[in-house]
Length: 113
Image (cartoon, rainbow, N blue to C red; front, side, top):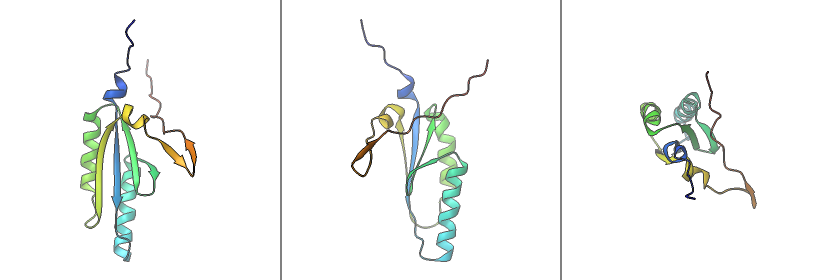
C-alpha cells in the first residue's frame, strides 16, 4: 500500500525574518523597536533574538505580509526574509543548552461550520 503524504505540509509556509540592526544611537534603537513591533503586529513570533517567524497556509498568503515587512524596513542594518515549507520547518532541531526542545507547532486552524 503506497504511503500517503500530507500535501499541506509542503504547501503551508513559514516566513522567517532575521535581522541585525544597529542600536548605538537613540534613533537607531527607536527604529529597531519600531521594526520589531511591526513584526509582532503582523503575527510573527520570536524564535530567538532577532529571528521571528510566522506560519501561513500558502505562499500567496505570505506574500502580503512579506510586502508589509519590506515596507517597514529600517534605514540601516540588515534584514533577511526566507520562506520555508512547514515540512522543512518541522525538521528543524532546537536545543536549549544540550537539551533537545520541540519545534514550534503551526497555530490551530479555526473551523467554521
